[in-house]
Length: 438
Image 1: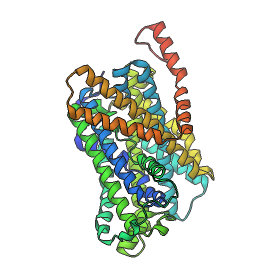
Image 2 (image 1 turned 30 degrees about the vertical axis):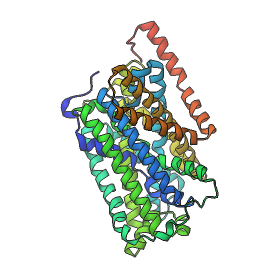
Image 3 (image 1 turned 135 degrees about the vertical axis):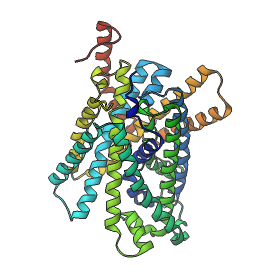
Image 4 (image 1 turned 135 degrees about the horizontal axis):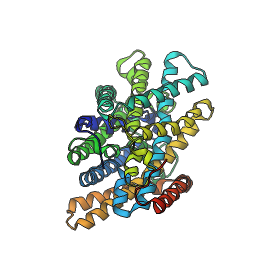
């Protein structure tokens, strides 16, 4: 597989910023308030999902060290289980990526609306479309430029997210944690619920593996970036949630629309709504840029293996698979119309649940691929086995917490990929293993 010119490749820290930036999105500003109704049990949820996410990042680190090519999870599934499983993993992963992207553009414009005193629904939509279009065009400039930009944006957004909590540690009121489970649900059910919610914060831990073909020394750089980026995100979430919950009284946090702003007001005094809104805009835009880097490269690797149409193999002179970027963004546009609906919050929640369910299926298959590849090597260590078992148990536990309805919707979305899969197989039978698609 041709993977681009050397001077178009990136190193460790742009890749760390890609992973961290894709993980730390708009959810970091909203989840503390969402979790407040469950009580301090939500901290246990963060701890469990952080451990599970780090175990998964170690699995993907080892997979990417063995197969340092562009593609990510689909590539590992195909290597272990063949073309059919590889195709549907790629289809599901690609679909959840462009289904999730509109939430970032909509959230960014939502914060802009707060700063501007309110915007009409159609103004919302136009700004969202312009943001998506602008970042789509920017991504055509290549991974080297977009990767460096992502490093700058991620640094810009991570610093305040760490600074406020580190200072806020000294203002924590431990009485705020006295009620462990305030949801009224049984302990186990409440724990499953908060774990599912917090898992949204770790969707994307594998994204550093997707553009591996455009990374310097990918077999070492990508694994390190995956683990470092996931660990940084886990620290941001854990420290931030502890401090916000410890500084803002539970009864206020439950109804808060800007938990970090309320925490900053309690720590520093004054009104921090505007700075926090600006930080949230930067966070959302940075995550959108990072996911656009990834979403265009998901079908690129599959196209090289004959599982997606060959149009996705075409690249700019900077190495960007431009049809992957453009088509993915076009698929995102219809979902921007959510901002015109009065039921926006409910639709957001539905998208989050679908995306988490799909990614859990991808993670479970990736861990199984990890075990199969280790079995082929017949030389795995006890530590590798322990990491894999931990990641598999976490993935299965998280899937068990998902409702059957969400699993059903996710399987239906996978079925939308059947026509293209059958068409590609037919083309292969007619034209051979390397067909030309129009």
